[in-house]
Image (cartoon, rainbow, N blue to C red):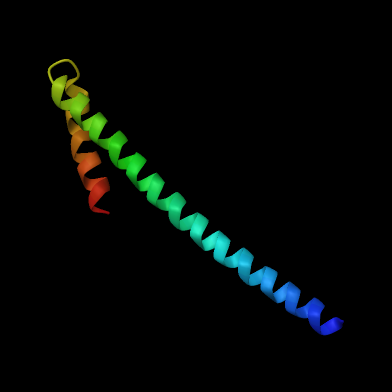
Length: 69
């Protein structure tokens, strides 16, 4: 019986690790897509309102630099 208990724990550990890796992968993909959409909308607003908010024009480079890293 002890052999089956050990195998069950190992199998559960592997299952948990695979589940965590898949979950982190999907979460990071969703995060990157959402961040890209938000950055695109912010850039669009900055371009549309560049006369209204001159202080935001310099932040446009910040957004571009952040995408490079």
